[in-house]
Image (cartoon, rainbow, N blue to C red; front, side):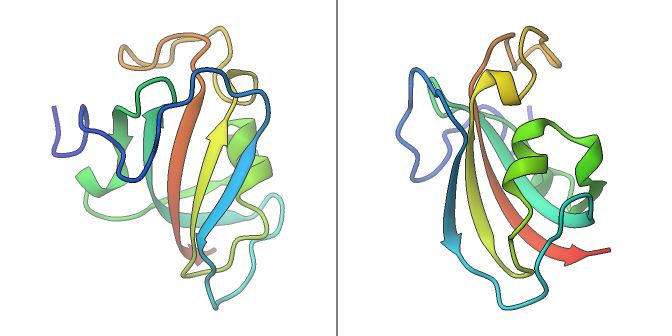
Length: 124
């Protein structure tokens, strides 16, 4: 287990049934705006909606992670565009826009609604 894995996501109240993507800007950045299909660099923390328990955080790896928005779960590819560099956004994602019937890791059961806090560092 890492520093964040298994702990509770700060400021999040568990949700039993997420029916649609929720995009909550916690802090709007002042830098460039993300366009669809961009490659971004971000820190993220992911948790299960049902209990708020963190399953992974890039902060445990040290550096922010770079990824193309056309290669991630639908909740990210729809929820990240529009963010600005320096911003912090919370995405509450229904299972249908996450991993659906798949269990990508032992601590992410199939059909799980997920919540991600995303801190946008850069656009590549």
